Image (cartoon, rainbow, N blue to C red; front, side):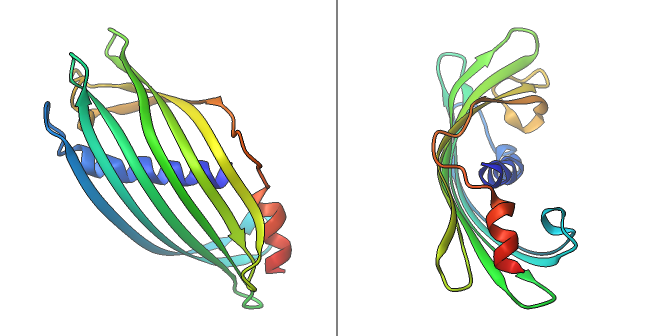
Amino acid sequence: MRRLLLATALLAGLVLAVSAQAEPGRVIKQTIHEDDLNLIEGFCETDMAVQSHFVADVTVKIMPRGRDGLIYFANRLSVTETFTNLDNGKMVVSTVNAIDKDLRVTDNGDGTLTILILSTGNAVTYNSDGKAIGRNPGQIRFELTVDHGGTPSDPSDDTEISFEVVKDSTGRTDDFCEVTVPALS
């Protein structure tokens, strides 16, 4: 679940870049590609130094709905992240394929919106032989509350107030670090 939540958090950050184009009554669809290389020291609370190569492809659809024209998001996310132990060259690959979509957007009447979001998909971690060593299929629901900045139908000026998981993962939830650290050691 942690890997799926991290991917969702990345998606939220990428979506902000697209949301500035949102206008009332206009449907927007855009594809985003992100490719990044990082050094992670103390990987999974160990003394391991790991290089991460992260590649994400996201399709974002932004559309107004309802009589108030509140903006709803629907996203398809595909992430592949390769982790390589710098000491021994061992590696694992983590893949996430997910769909996130706003189920309900509520104008609270106090300058805030509450957004119920469904995230569903599959996360799999593979060892260097290509064997699946960890899985996280299923779905999760969370609620996001934002200050809409005086413009409830324009997400470009929204700021997050709170984030809460309202329904935990419905599928198998293998601990990422538990399966990854032995494969990298």
